[in-house]
Amino acid sequence: MTHRRRDLALAIKSCLDSLAQDARNNELAELAHFVSLAALAAEEAAQSADPQANLLKALMSGEAGHC
Image (cartoon, rainbow, N blue to C red; front, side):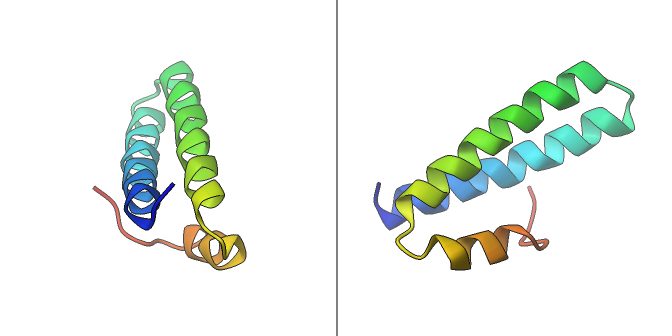
């Protein structure tokens, strides 16, 4: 995966995290769970593309922007 693909995976993860939060706020627990799983997959894709995955993990633990 290139840096562009890593950045795209991070953008998708951010959007999915936002959707999961919206689902939780609206008492859609099953949907929130499903979307959270998709966000984890996007995070794993981004980490696999990053040779410095530890730095990426630190970035992901904060509020790095949302859709």
